[in-house]
Structures are given as C-alpha cells and as structure tokens.
Amino acid sequence: MSGVKWIKLSTQMFEDEKIRLIESMPEADTILIVWVKLLSQAGRANANGYIYLSETIPYTDEMLATIFNRPLGTVRMALEVFQQFGMIDIDDNHFISIINWDKHQSIEGLDKIREQTRLRVEKHRERKKLPIGNVTETLHDNAKVTDIEEELELEEDKERDKEKENVPFVEIVNYLNDVASTNYRHQTQKTKDLIKARWKEGFRLEDFKRVVDTKTAEWIIDEKMAMYLRPTTLFGTNFESYLNQKPKGANRPGSHQQHPKKSNDTSGIDF
Image 1 (cartoon, rainbow, N blue to C red):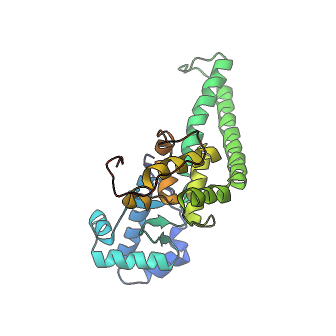
Image 2 (cartoon, rainbow, N blue to C red):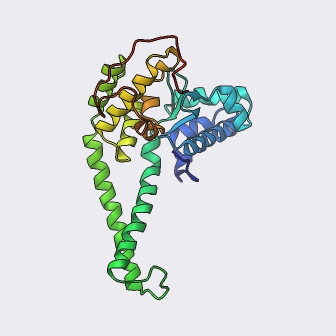
Image 3 (cartoon, one colour):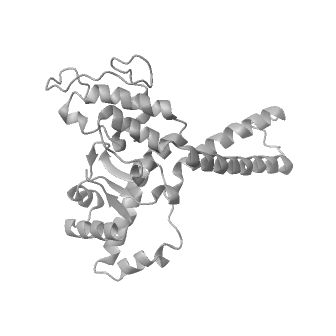
C-alpha cells in the first residue's frame, strides 16, 4: 500500500491529558517530536497504524533513533512513555502500532471518496451532456456537483458502518488457526484492524481463505517462513499480492489444501 502525503493532527492535541503529562517530563520537546515522527512514519507505511521497515522486519530502537535523528536514550524513553500511556502497542514480534490510528485518520476513506466523487461527477456531466473541460458551467451546476459529493460521503459512512457490523472476524481467524495450526485470537485489536482494512477494500471471506491456503502451502514447509503464518503478515498490505499468487497444489480457491510435511529443503521456496 502506498504511503500518504499527510496525516491529521487535532487542534486539541496539546489539551490532551497525556500530552500535558509528557510536557511536564524532562526532554518533553524531544519526546513530542518523536511522537509526531512516529505518526508521520505510520502515515508513510499507511498500514493501519503499523510502523515497520518491512512487513517482516520491525524497527528497532536503534533504527528509529537513526531515522528520527534523536538520541537513542531519548527514543527509548519516549517509546516507554507512549506504551505506558496507551498511545502505542508493541507486540511480541516487536512491531509498533499507533493505537486508534484508524479512528483518527480515515486515510482509506478519503482516497476512496475522492476517486468515487470524480467518477460520479464525470457520469453526471455525461448525463447532462456537459463537456468535462467547459469553463462556462453555471453556479447551479457546481452546486449539483457539491450535492453529489455530500451524497457520496453519506453513502460511504453508511457502507462503512454496515461493513463494520458484518466483518466475519471469528470465521477468518478460526480458518487460519485450522489450516496453519496456529492459535490466534479474533478479539486482538490489531488483527481486527487488519481484517477490517482489507474488508473495506472489498475483499471477502473467500479471499481471506485463499490467502491462508496459498501462503500456508508455501511457507509451512519452511521453518524460517512458517513463523510468518500470522495475521500481521497474511492480512497486511501484501494481501492482494498473496491473493493473486497461484496456489501450490490447490484444488480450488478457498478450499483446504493438503499441506506437505515440514522439511529442511528450501530449494523450492520463493523468498
């Protein structure tokens, strides 16, 4: 997923209790700069608040200190403070994520609305037989275009609420656990955020099953790659690439595959 060029910062940011507490700490200014840089990095990744070098390589404290051009000790202290205040989460694999990122940013929604508005306006002009480049459009016509944009935003909000209610988190995670012999929980917020993001992009249950089948067949025979049979990797920003990958030995999309036994021979693995 490509990164975004901007992120939202609330004008009430410095009235937040957590920010006020941080401002009372030593090196408060540097800590706040680290926070904004983390938000910016999350925007660059555009992966629902996750911050990483790649989907399989998390940032270390040393990496962040270098990237942010700040002292290592200060970066470590800042990360501890953010984690303690519930501003970030660091999972068992050391991947950092901004808590409530999706709630505050709505990046995907903005991109989708912008594109669909363009298409809707284009169709509207065609119906009215108005040239796209006509500079003599009346204010009345422009008002209609604005109405279309507002209508689309309302439709997007309704669709977003509907999708939120119907996302089959339990079935998706249970399928992964069944096929890959894992034990992930569907209640984990990071897992739900990733599934929800893919769902908003239009992917459905059979797509998730196909990705699980495809990558399990490929990775389960490799001890080094088997560890990546997890939601953060399978349901992340490479989801569509995995979905379009030809399954190895699959009988049909979305069906359980017969996975070979683990072997130390990695000559057939595409890294």
